[in-house]
Length: 492
Image (cartoon, rainbow, N blue to C red; front, top):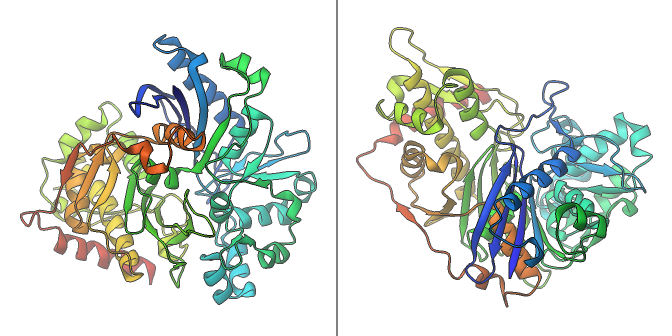
């Protein structure tokens, strides 16, 4: 039995065809090969076209089909993972009203801060587990305030994965997990937050039907089935944000288990069974994919906007003629600390762990007679690793103490240098797995379709491919402390 997983990323769309018995991908593909554009109409803004995501989904699936190694009619269920916190708006005819305001857009920070103050910090933190910040609810408030003609036409508010499911099935649903990532959900009452909805003046009818993450969210329409070459009526049985989905794909389902990823953004995502929150809302708590009111599973999420985006920017600027692997090898020729060169990788929007400050990216201590490309490559990856350490220390202060972190061997975790810097600056071992979000989405579909009796069964055959633990021979602590002093001088 085959499962189709779709991962709507910021850079590209990935799809995977997974055999439910082996739990492995038969084939995967992504589109486009070059990273998708982010529109920045003003400083701090970030938008993408949802129709672009849909076109890229078709293209990626088409690449898989052309290989001719599976029968599309054998696909029995679909799952979707997606970039979190994006705002997608449609009218009653399911037509888009504007481009999506995506996760790294900072325009709603002020509105979110006002809501935090007026709703009350204690209410927001104990009920929503977050400040409204620049999450989806606050982005919707920005549209209401600044684009009233658009707001008046809204029938349903969606996240990016809901839009793709709508294109597949012509139906719109959401989940507690999705509503919590938009900061619409009251965890004390396990209902839509009436206080937040009233504060922003939102009609509850804007919210789609709420369903469990692992359930039927619609069935493939005849027109789309013919377009893709699939059977009509195949169910979409799973939808989740990319970070809960990444955790699922690493079998992170129970309290104390930790996942991390370092793609366009960087994330550490830890599981808890407590309604925990950071007093400053620098890390954020959402309902995990297996959350229920009866068995609470909360994902505590640290997000760093400027990780893979920093590495990509460095490559595009200084290493356009070589591969990432070659760039990594060049960086390894320089000693730990990059001979004093430091990088603060915070040039991709307001950083939540820095209290929503927009401090920008920084290069520090450049010596024109000493530092070259190799130093910059190394300093960039070390700076990204140090930003993970900084965020992990915030999580530790809130009671999360990982013994091991599970990661997919993808993006920056393919770099030996970055892995070394990450493990030795955080002091936590890392297990690497062959996985990606599209495979996780496919296996999530299998759970939702009840092919697997319970979530953990979907990952029973998946084992780590590499284990890396800290080594005392790498003296990252003094280098990190210098980097931390540099960061603190920018955030006072």
